[in-house]
Each structure stands twice: as structure tokens, then as C-alpha cells.
Length: 501
Ligand code: AHR
Image 1 (cartoon, rainbow, N blue to C red):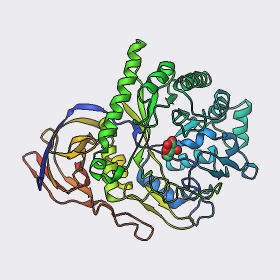
Image 2: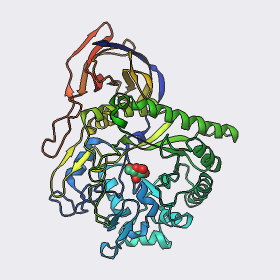
Image 3: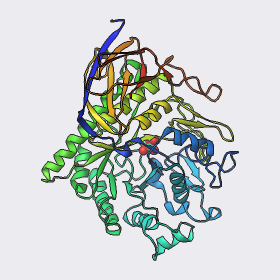
């Protein structure tokens, strides 16, 4: 095995992939565990504002830089009655949440979510319940949210204090309807038909062209009907929706961390499969329209982790899915972000699942502090510096062998021409053992300052309540510039943000 890799990339700002879609840096708030309660919303917290939102969390969310937030689920939405979460809080019912085996207090609902979105400046992405409910309830919710006034539901919203309609443009038609774990799981035909009916009817209320509707794709690439599901659902909905969703979570199965480092391979194959299927349906229907992907759940998720998985039955806001991420997880996470950017010609919306406490970049303690997980940093850097135009990158990199994906290139990278004329290269060295010299042929751009920020560390190093700043990116000064070529030393297992200003 080599003890040092050498890789090279080249790009030219004239040769582009796509404008980076604003919605690519979405995230997700579900009524699950402590994402909402004691996550973003904790009226008793010392930093809580008048809306009960934690200011310490709001500050971290702003620093993270999401552009859009999906809400209220996830599996939760498939049993949710949205009316429970609006109006005077003392009148809101407590309900069993079958998805997560807990009690939902409904002290946070649509109005509070919209306040949260306005406070942090993100676009809302609302999901409707197509599990226990259907067309009529989706229409009622839409009318409450988006109709100006003069009807039962719109006037109820105004009576609840929100005079102006919310103007929500992006709607998910259900969640993971193919999953046996989903309340009200449907066949592809059943789901395709109801999704089409809902989509067409929502457009009868709001005929504006910028209403964007997401049909549920497969819950993962590993689902038994992956491909066939998309084919059937899109055959029913091709004319009425804009996106098909994709969800993917990665963790080192059987401890195979080498394959885990190459998880982005699976994400690339997943995107290829969904696009091929969607375009095949379009061809069959002789349509010029393209259906894009909303990758509205993606992350590293240790689904076998025992901690917090079995809460006290019907407790309220217990600790659930509270993964603590390592430096290695952050590097894999960064490589997934690179893939989303590389494929942003067809992946035009995406949501990091989730935002706070639940498989999240931000952690909190009830009544206590909030801190950044390791995965916080790649997202924040990509959201800050990954805006503009994705460039075609030619790359030459040595590979490494994986059990799951065969030979995989050690370098995973993307270049973005930023609006201010600078270029940012995001580069991951996926090799766990071997450092790399990355040569960037920057002869097509003006090279002034080059700054590099690198996140690496011990594989298992984590940020915790007791040690919240153990892992963070540091300035990497191992950089030289000569005759238009930039050479950067990338440590083994590292995420790197290279700014060419
Ligand atoms: O994000 C956690 C869960 O993962 C969501 O509720 C569900 O949609 C997916 O299975």
C-alpha cells in the first residue's frame, strides 16, 4: 500500500454543471425525540425568546446556514392531525404518536414553525399526511396556510394571529409511503393515485407556477421495489408534481469503515437510478418535462445504536436517535455533500436529516448549553462557500479497495465558482490511512490568496457536552502555489475547504 497519494484536478469556469440550487442546503425538523421540544423550542430555557425558541440554538442554526426546513415529518406526519397544533395552546390535545411510540403535546405546531422559519430566514417545506389522512385534510391545511382570507380555514389562521398567508411553496405529498414501518403504508399504485389527486387539487387552490410538489420516492435504494416504485408513482404523477424524493442514511455496517468512507458511491448510484427511472417515465409519456430529485433526508445514522432507542412508552420528548458524530462521520458526511453538489443539475433540493438533537449537527441539553457536532462544520462551510455555479471537474486519483463498492477513488471533490469571482474546492481524502498531495490546476482562474480549512482527527473523536470543541476545522498551511498549480496536503480521512480568492 502506498504511504502517500498524489491526486490532481482541473476545471474551467466556462464548463459548468449547474447553478447551485438554493434548496440544496435544506434541513429537517420532525416531531421526534427532542428535535422540537428542548431542541429548537423550550420556553423555560434561559435563552428562550418570546416565542419559546432557544436563542442559543437560533444562533447556531444561522451559523449552520440551512436555506429550507422540511416539517413536521418524517414518519410522524403519517399520523398527524395538523389542526391539533394551531390555536390557543391550552386547548391543544395531547395525542399518541404511533410513529415513535410517544405522546405529542402539540405545544408546537404550524404557526410556531412559521415563526421559526421567519426568525432564521429559511424557506418552509411542509409535508401533508397521506398515511391516516388524504385529500380533504391536505386541502384544508393548504387553505389554512396559503389562502389569504374569507374562508373558514383562512379566517381561522387570521383568528390565530397570522393575518398574512404563509405562502408555502414547497410541499411533500406524504412521507416514505413504501415503508412497512409507515402508518398507512400504500402500494405504489394507491399512493401514485392519491398523490396525483392531492397535487392537482392543491393547484386548483393556488395555480401559481412556482408551487413545487414532491412525490415520495423509495425510502432507500435498498428497498425491494426501488425503481419499480418510482416508475409507478411517476406514471401517475408525472404531470402534477415537480420532484421525486430520495432518502439515504449511512453507517458502517458490520464495522466495515473502509466501505463506509465510500458511502457517496451509493448515493451516486441512487441518484443515477432515480434519474434514469424518472426520465424513462418522461420518455414513455412523450413529455419534455424533467422531474428532479428532492433528496429530502440524508445523513450518517447509526441505526443499530442502542442509546435512546427505546423510550419509556408514551413519554413526551424523550431522547431518541441522538447520535454523537465522530471526525470520521464528519468526513463521510462531507463526501455526501460533495455528491449532492456534483449532481445539482438534477438534485435541486435536499434536506440534512435532522436539525437538532435527532441525528443532528446541533445538540442541546434541556436548560443547558447547545453545541456543534462534528458534522456541523462541513455543512456550514458548504452552505457558506458552495454558492454559485458547480464546475465540471476532471480528476485523477489513486483508488482504494472496498468490500462494498470495489475500487473507489481516494479523492472525492467538487469545485464551485462563487458569485464574487472566487472558486471553492471541497475535497475529501477518503483513505483512512494514507495522506494525499492534491494538485489543483488553477490556470483558468485568477489565483490571489489560497486558504484551506481542514477537518480531521482521531476516528472516534467527538464533540460532547463535556468537551464541545474537541473537533473543528483548522487552518491548513501546507499549501504552495506555483505556475498556476496549487498543491495542498490533505491528511488521511479529511474534509477540506480550499478557497481560491
Ligand atoms: O429522520 C428519521 C426518520 O427516517 C424519518 O422520520 C423517516 O422519514 C425516515 O425513515
